[in-house]
Length: 232
Ligand code: SF4
Image (cartoon, rainbow, N blue to C red):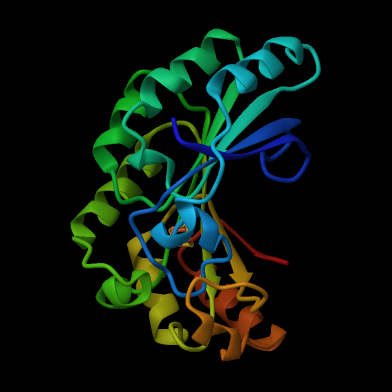
């Protein structure tokens, strides 16, 4: 596993659990607003020092009584060729596992779900499927995104869908379109774009939505989804 970051404690990233977070290096998307450019841009990833797996497992062995779970985030974890054996090793230590994903690899998600290797999935929704390739800056077969959504909804495990919104990419029609896409799912979180650090420097000049816009999006989304929240 190419591991670029390890946070030993989080109370925020795994709902209702005390967890550690592992950040994997590399992503198959190039969202301009991405706030982890060093995990995504190949010009930068090559300079990121990797954390040896042994170091992570040594820590996890010693924290079994103090931590409930491990979050695997990125980058995009499902592009790591050894993700499945890596998660098996974490599960062997009896940890809960939460996976953060962009939903581009449903075949990996299917194996993880089928083999009961994950306990929570958080999938980013990037926008209206018609705009997906434009938003993520790579050509993406949106059938894969749809497949991931359906798999997650039917998985029987805890999940959330979440979306970073910004005026450049999203409007009320898009929110309706996304509502249809994830109709009847349990949880949807709306996050506002913040222009601190971005993969594409042009996004640092992009505007964020006003709170009233986000509230309107949440109202629209409540026609489709059980729980909708705006997350700071
Ligand atoms: S925002 Fe997520 S999916 Fe997009 S480039 Fe960054 S890590 Fe990849």
